[in-house]
Image (cartoon, rainbow, N blue to C red):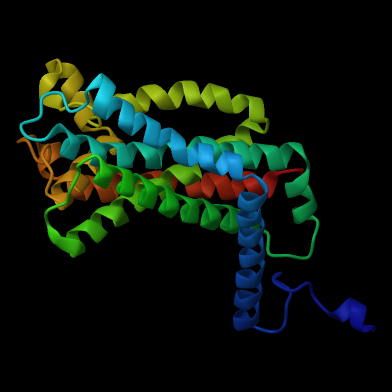
Amino acid sequence: MSAATTTAIPGQGGSERGAPFRLGWALADSWTMTRRELAHWARQPVAVLVNLAFPVMLLLMFTYLVGGGRGVDGDPTDFLVPGMLALTMAFGLEATMLAVTQDLGKGVIDRFRSMPMVPGAVLVGRSAADMLQSVVSLAVMTGVGYAVGWRWHNGAAAALGAVGLLLLLRFAMLWVGIHLAMVAERPEMVSAVQILVWPVGFLSNVFATPESMPGWLGAVVEWNPMSATATAVRDLFGNPGGATGSWAAEHAQILAVLWPLAIIAVFFPLAVRRFARLSR
């Protein structure tokens, strides 16, 4: 029997080299896909800058023009900036969807699936690059927030905990975006998702406290996953608008972990299953 017929494709279940080799191959393939996504940043700098500038414009608009922080006792900027950080993490799923649908439309993912590579590397590369961009976006928004007068007051450890909760929310929304992109399959369908994302984003305590809203609406707002993250982040930063007496507000840090984990538990397997069924 020839070597060609006895050598299994690296990274597949038939490999006889053992789990360490398969893991190393999976990491190498995932890093290759991540570098591919990062290379797009250099080739499409305008798109990257627009994605970074949009939440900054929203923050400046609500700080100086619209007047966010309604119902807050204290500096409205300290209330608004943590909420905008949470909103930025949720709104990022549109860029994820656009990237995935463009690859689907051009047949790029089909070509990757036909190559001798670990199938999940495409999704891992997409998610890793997305998370790196989210870190950059958080850094930019934090810098702008600091420039307009926002400060955190509970030390570095609490601030890092807040950043961790924000990235956890982003990671959850990332898998929502990947799954919806593979369902939509076309870039033009992203606009339909945008129509749904905006109401969900604004139906939260990002710009105003639930106490300043009608009772029924405030109750709905407090149970929004984005509200849980925004409230928990404000509490960790030592900013106004944290716990306000309701169960959801008092346990916001727990909900800020449980909500994203629940979203990941639903959409991660859905995305993986959908990816496995592409082009079958």
